[in-house]
Length: 396
Image (tube, rainbow, N blue to C red; front, side, top):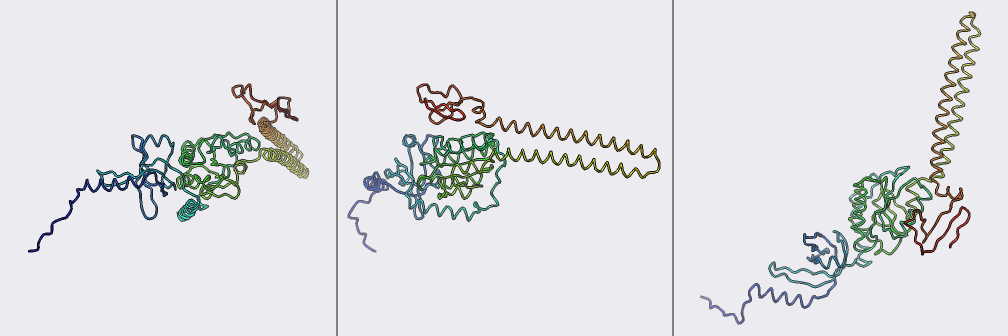
């Protein structure tokens, strides 16, 4: 029988071993940074945020306590490439470790570019970029929804362009951050709002140019899928002419700039006026031509009846022809008047929509801080004032 060798040291219990591991990890992994992709993001009823930070080879459980989440003001979504900072903590009852996150930032340019190419290839393989999914834009939109920040130059460019180009359209803004960790979730909510409510004819998502990090919210998978699933025509206008985002590839139409988005979304009211006037002239000429045609035809019929030998039939035929001429002339005159009235009404309506018409009549427009003051409540007494006539604009 083999002799039992006595142990020269004490064997630790599970708790003792876990305490040693806890002490080792928590002392050596404090205030660290780690980069990866957020997944399985969930927020508990008490406000804590739980998620997994992963890459191709490993996963790290993470938690953001409610107080920290409120301080950071973040909205995490699955698929975001981020850098998190915090401490490693061992939770002994479950024998697992996790990171207590106190900082969340977007990842660096190299990882973002790689993530961009990977997501682009993934969505292209799924068919999200195919033309078959693209919706046609409405020709004469009455209401346009814009998802962007109310403080950006992009929104001001879109609004000013629409006021000049197609003042008949109303603009509805859904304010959303366009930069930073909260931007993607807010943009998704804006797209989903317009898609759900159906209170606009088309949607524009937009922001000005910037670095890849600045534009990154429009490269998030959640935004791309929201664009694809939107039930309204959508234009993506992100960055400048050389900038492309994932949302550009998925959208029904890509605009190089916010201003171009407004141009692509609407017709030019001046061109519409000219087309209506041209149509009016064509209707008038065609109607007059029809009248002359029937007159000539009636005249020909009248002359052909002169060959009839019976005077009585000739008189009856002439009477019939005269009645026909009168009915045709009366009906044609009514049609001309109806079409002329309808076209004139439409032209008057378009003229009333011209924002500069009051200036032509002698009215004065008040501006403050580059904005047209339309109501007394928007006027700031101590701020500089600009007055605009039709031929001059001065500051007082």
